Length: 168
Image 1 (cartoon, helix red, strand yellow):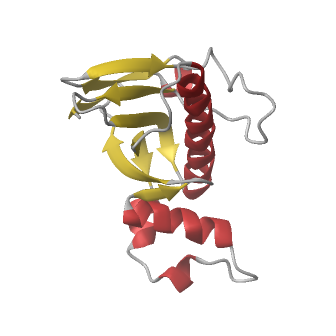
Image 2 (cartoon, rainbow, N blue to C red):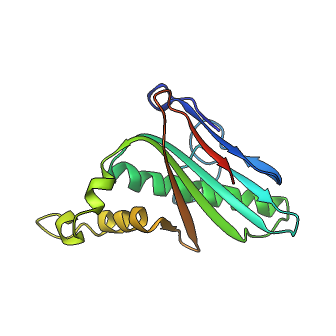
């Protein structure tokens, strides 16, 4: 899958021994504008295994993955999840048996933040619950969508903005 925007340009590569269905929104946003979440990630693909198991893979590519950018990335991944569900419904494929999210980034400051105790990651005035929630997603390698959990696989992109996730 390819990110075409100049700022985050790059390619993420996946390989699968199984049949896959590529799902990609045209340029920006999801075609499902009735959804509250109108964000959309780079793309998705549905892997259909020999035993019929359906694994939905979602990808978001970031240049710099700060806490606020990671929160946006989670929203974009969830938007693509809903877009992919609609494609699966049209094709009468049902729901995926498993959802895996991938985030490829050039740099991040989240690794340093998760080494601190969580109370030190909170704002001094009030509690930034969305930020703490995002840090927990990053730390636990799991994202919670409205109706399911998704595993989270992270990859640091090379100087050309590319990352190879290998065989899935």
